[in-house]
Length: 100
Image (cartoon, rainbow, N blue to C red):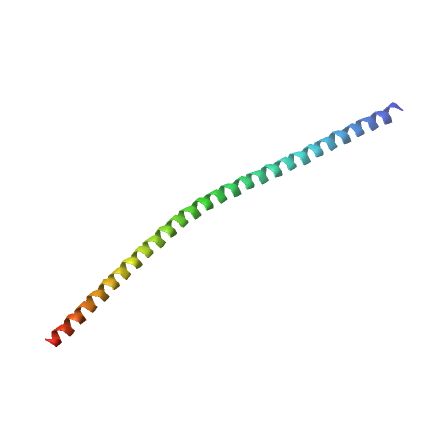
């Protein structure tokens, strides 16, 4: 009668040990998954910071280009204004020359 009880005790011990190992494996897998997710979150944060820096740099370049284009357009308009003044003066001089 002791042998069946002993066998039952050994079998239940093996089952408990097996269950504990399975639970430990599940826990280990859960932790590995969480670590992988945390690593991906860190990578997302790093990519976002890099993108923000690049966007800031692009904005600064765009702003500088806008300012340069504005200055060039104003310079062209000033030149056109002077050209119009010169053309008007030349026309006046021609009219004066025709009168004489």
